[in-house]
Length: 172
Length: 247
View 1: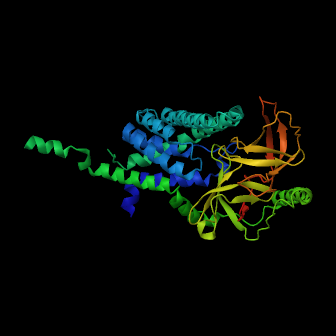
View 2: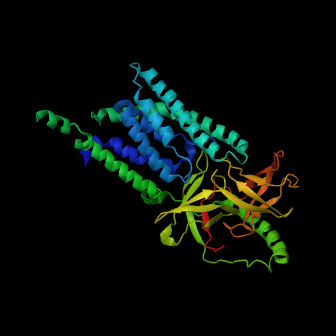
View 3: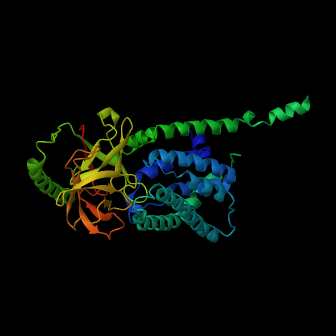
């Protein structure tokens, strides 16, 4: 069992991403918005295992998270796939402080990308009936999510990066 | 011969990792098709120790007072206007459920309740909190049910503005104040008007209090849009009732 935990910690964390997504701890939020949790797992995973793995597990995360949200017309898959590919092309800076800071910026950008793609889907779906009413809350959602994701990323991503790296084993 | 063997070993289906990934993919497709039932039931068990307590004091008491007042007014008028036409249903087999997951900010506006198909919850059942309507059950697993809130961009329900006797469409806008679209440019709606579920609605039972008009926007083409403040604030309610009614 111990061997499983040390070798497969990334899988255990993967399983817990949707649980945290469901949990939605309000005390961590801003204006009712939460950080975009899947990116915290996807960034270190893709950095270690490359773009192809980023794409595949971005798709996997998207499938699971879509099944938990009720919006059957909108999907998180496009954003997560693009983030997976993008994150896989990033190499860690040798300077520790700069590296940590970059996690925040990269996750913020990823969150902006995912949020924008999701908003565009909502806009496209509701184009006919008063879509201008959606703009202000949507921008607020995107900005709050970008800020929170960037704020927590240096702490969570660097920890997960170390944990995944310490497993010393690549998938491909 | 050797050449042929080398090629055949290099095929993707000879790699164990690819089959594992394919297996995971199939499993996740199953999760997607079952709308996350496995995850929701798993979450049901691990969140059990943290379910909300019985008391929410002021918020609930205030909302209940408002709800009673509005209901009383609506029923008085209905007795005169609709009794002959509508059979008002008094259902006693409502299901009380606790909110075990709440997503009331961001894009996804839904709550997950600790009662599922084993308790008789069905897709489409209206869900009310202290104050009024919260949303409708969109999906059930064995132990849990997911509710699309009125604030969700996916929610669209027919409503009735009693003072001016007009029907409208309540659509979620992704913030805490859903929009009411009145397809009449000269409807004389005012801030403070009560909004309830429409007697003409095929999704909801009539006369469930929903909210009050918060602001009236400028007319846009042939439509009038209004922001509604919900009587049952979904971000603080811990206990709800699932209505088992046939519409």
